[in-house]
Image (spheres, rainbow, N blue to C red):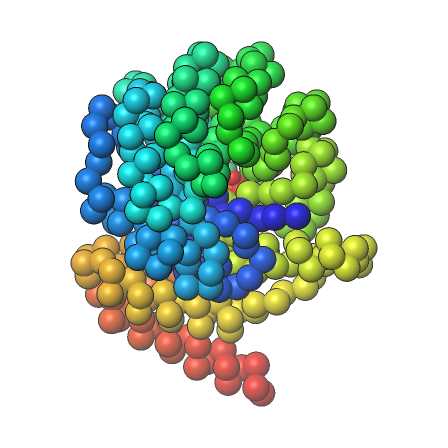
Length: 330
Ligand SMILES: Cc1cc2nc3c(=O)[nH]c(=O)nc-3n(C[C@H](O)[C@H](O)[C@H](O)COP(=O)(O)O)c2cc1C
């Protein structure tokens, strides 16, 4: 099985991709979406979204990063895919799932799910220009208002020559409201000639097992669950590999100390990449996810939430690291 790190605009940039792929268990990442209108974007835009292009399109741990494009015009999408591929992107992903009103109003993201013919036109235009050795994948939801077009959507994307498909198992109407309807993927997956990657609401090993069983898929994409538990991909793989029925939920590979080490590194790399005023927000944003699993993260969040200076935030994390180290040694 393969596990893909979900694209998350404004959250999962290359610094987080680095942190998360270091933990192991991930086979691929996808960039935040690159918005395509009617022109070919300059190379610098692709390097900004995917600095990994400077290193063969892989994270420092060697995990490939696909570039995700979002737009409604086949020709412009094709030209930008070609450019991304020529810069060394190991794969191109096309976003047909974004629910944001501002994006949908401008003919991009999930609104295109209403017109399977247009999905076909976009995917086939991209597939036609990109070297066949470079995979082209699409990321969809079950539909826009409902899932009545789901079969046609999948058929259109397959017929257009996509190599893989990720399904976020909810409609645009469902937004991010639990549950995810993994079982809806199963009938399509059974006949689909290309791999389908199941996505949505996987927060634990139990969820992963249930999603695989209900969807019939072999591959998963993890978003918020992995930000909340950075060792989740590794845990899922270990659990499936050993076919261990024992209580895997109790296993904590990384531990709070490991998370504090990651946060320390994250402060350093984020400071190198972003203006000082943005650093604090990025650390707080990730801690916001981490506190969903680690009780100590909630406490640390309270301690830094009013701090703005990156050095003060880093010091606070460093203090926690020492306290926690002493606590575990005692
Ligand atoms: C803050 C945020 C930003 C997102 N940005 C993108 C994006 O740029 N491209 C995309 O295809 N999906 C995006 N998504 C959707 C995720 O990739 C994923 O499909 C969704 O979060 C469900 O998976 P999860 O339950 O594992 O988080 C985003 C989701 C969130 C919460």
